[in-house]
Length: 562
Image 1: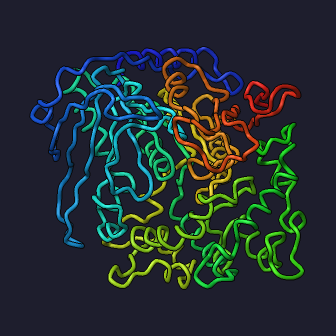
Image 2: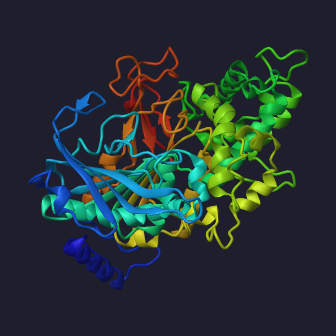
Image 3: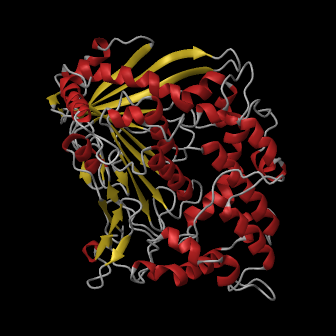
């Protein structure tokens, strides 16, 4: 599908290499040609015109312009195609499975395909519009992309599908491998030609899907947009369960984990972080840009008062510090084995998003995923109870079981859920594909420290610099994929396309706050003293946004990437 422009560019790169490229003067990477568009000939007849193995097209419906609206923008006229792949009955749990999907094909097509990787544990065919980044600024569909969305091989967002071994594998990575050629076949039937450029993107588990695709299907996609990736999702979930145990032990109201680390106490810690770190980037503006320097500057034990009497929100007890500090440093099992990654201290700890992940999802979402989808063997579905599993289960046992396999579950969770060799992206790099990654530094479930460590390993594997094919952007203050005291609205798809197809490597991406009147929805976590339209540059790692010394602190033009 990538044709002669890629081959010609690759040949040029090889010629340059033969003419003296070395470590200090590496050969230029291939430049992929820009996509050219097409027009949808007809919609309804795709039900009969699409023929692909193990696939049933169930409907093809013409959708009028304006039927969908994204960020206040009416989506252009398009065709919605729905279907299923690999319908079957499981020999293990006796239930019916299929890979459900929908595609949306614009009448005026830009020649590009976008695989929308969905979040959570999948299980739903969400509307195939394609997020361009965070904050619902626009959609790939509205930009003219053909977009696919799927349920990843199970029809309900319930972890019980993990009893079926094939459903596990489809969820982990195989659904992508099956859907990709089918989707390109549908596009061929619809427009008379396949996509000239293909992109893959998502946030959270969608970010994990994208990183897995970058490792497993790098020959099928040209650009990868990775948001807050849970690329070691089983480990992050176990670490969150470890947090539930700690907060339950600190709770003043039994059964209410939030009383172990209250909103006032979390706000206290964030304020202390800002006191030490806010001005490290040249101005006190409620954002910690230099995350690395902040972790050296801030110490929980020293910089937050220790209670000498009753907890009242103005201090942390000695017991809280003894339990919470190690969670930020990286949760461990009872035998001292590190489970996942450290989390940075940041400004976004007092939000509802942070609390939901730590105090609710740790008991009711992560537990089902660990116990039923990722453990080998899974827990007994008939007797499984998420909160009990979290609060009484053994962390070391969970860790061992997500690394285990057997005759029925032939791949461990750490095999089917994670990108193989994540710092070896040679296929992606050498064919001219590009990757852009973003991560909120106040993400409570997937740590930006983990993504930073991955990117450092990627840099090391590429002579100390991976910026010619992969760039990483931290989003100060942002919670999980959105929210927090942050400029959490930005478009990374447009710069990714420009990098892939025009060679314009992005040094920064403009991000805005979502204050009153924002078309993508108002961010309730914004401090009242911020401008409703505050903007900042998100800088390509390791650079940070630094105040120039003059100009409005509400305007991105007052900052530069240093």
